[in-house]
Each structure stands twice: as C-alpha cells, then as structure tokens.
Length: 354
Image (cartoon, rainbow, N blue to C red):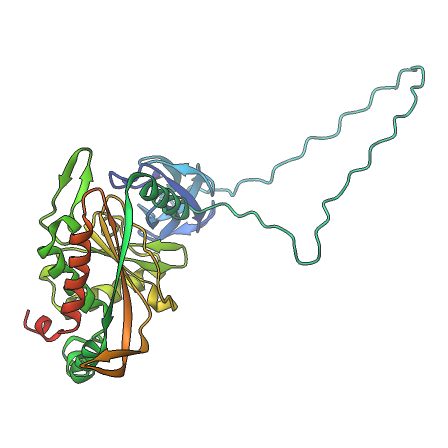
C-alpha cells in the first residue's frame, strides 16, 4: 500500500513554502517519523516526517518546488514485498539516420562573429545567490515598516553599574537554583514591561483609523541565526520571573541556530527588543517590527567618564535607542517610556521583589 507524504498545515499568516531538500531518495528505506525533507517558510524551517515505515516509492515535488498545505510531495510503499526501483537514468534519443544530401548551389560563407567572453579582473567575479524565503520576508517587512509607519528614534543612556553589581552578588546562588546564568536581557525585559504599563500606547498598534491597545505584554526578542534574523516571542513576559526569562531566551537562541523554532513562537508580539551590543554596535536606530509601534535597541556597554555627584568617574554606560511610530506615539510618551526603562535598570533591586 502506498501512503502519501503531504505538506503540513501552516499557520494563517503562511500560505506556501519552498521544498529545500529531500533527505531520502526513491528506493531508500524510511522509518515512521523519520525526517524525509526540509521545508522553508518565510518564518522557519520545517522538518516533514515519514507518516509510515517503508520505502520511498516516488517523489512528486523536487527540491526547490513551491508547495502549499496538503500538496502531495511523495509516496511511501509500506508493502515490503513490492519492489521499488530507483528512477532510471534519462535516455538520450538515438541520433537520426542522415538522409542523402541534395545538391544545392554553394552559398558564400558568412564569417561568424566571435563571442566576446566576460573578462573580470582577478578576484572580481560576481556570484548570484537566490534569497531564501526567510530573507525575502525580512526584506518585505523592513520595506513595509518604512512605507507604512512614521518612524522616529529617541535616545538615552543608562549606567549599567547597578545591574552588574547585583548580578555579581547573586550570580552563584541564582545559577545553582535555576540552572541558568542571570544575564542582562531579563532585566531589560522586565524594565520594558514596567514602562509599557505606564505608557500603554507604546505597546499598541495601528489598524486603519483605530489604535489597538494590547492588554498583554508579548515581547519579541530579536535573535540572529545562520539563516537570518528571527524574533521569537516571550508570551506574558510581565508575569515571568527573571529566571524564566533567561531560560526561555537561552532556549530560543539554541533552537534558532538548529532551525527548531515553531511558527507559532514567531507570531504576534506587541513590542520588540534588539540587542546589537552583542555584535559590538555602539549606537543604532532600530527599525519597527510591523504592526508594532515600538522597538528598543540595546548597545555595547563601554566604560566612559561621567559626572556623578559632582565628580568625574568611570562607569559602564550603554546607549538605549527607542524607535517608535510617531503616528500614535508622541515624543513626550516615547522619551518618558525610555526614561522609565533607564530608571528601573539603575535601581534593579526592585525587580528581585517581583
């Protein structure tokens, strides 16, 4: 009996995918639930498993095909007594027997124009590589953000000394209790949630002529992967502990690199945090993740001279950048939100009480 291998159902926001690669060929033995092929959507890479054990009997969609939900990709023969032959090599047609030539008046030979090869200087040849679906989708969303929103960015700086001191003091106990290090991102997530509760329009979005206020705090965490930027979402981040946030972010990072994130983990989100500081960025203007109205950019922590109580001291300082949709977020609200984030980070002990 033959069992069909079909494209799985996608989420509502994903209509099609690209068949990246078959991991098995016709005639190969497969086990039930063994990965047969990889599909790429504009959000994640999906592994399609064998619905039954047997032999891969047919491939209907080759590598590179665009596929939609419920498309039949191939077939598995489950009857071990039925032999499945691999596809035969393509036979070239036999040359036709030449007919006797007919005598014709000779024509003057037209000299062929020489083909001019493209000449590149040493080391200057071009390479053309198709964009992945993920990269295409990233490009589309960035252009959408630029076209549809009135993006403005405001800046502030934060003294990271209090957070660093607190982390150093509780790190050993925290790691022993929770099995994960107390990083910086959890402090920013909690500080952002506090700020969004004070200034809910920064957590809102535009829908036509309406402002949609979100009563949840689903924070997207921008994660770089080998295939491009992905933004998995921390659901109800305001209710999560510092430990839970660190554990979830560590899991996101691991699965982003191994292409194991699920589509539903990348959808939604009411606000985004992007940490360019891990790559050494000193200052940037982050771009919105539509339809969100705010994104917080984090940057490199650098020792700088600052004035404290009338004295010049060296402190680990970080620039913060908030890009926001000026259609619904006024400068007063944006600046006040960013200041509230800074204030929480400079008195982080309040977060340990939550």
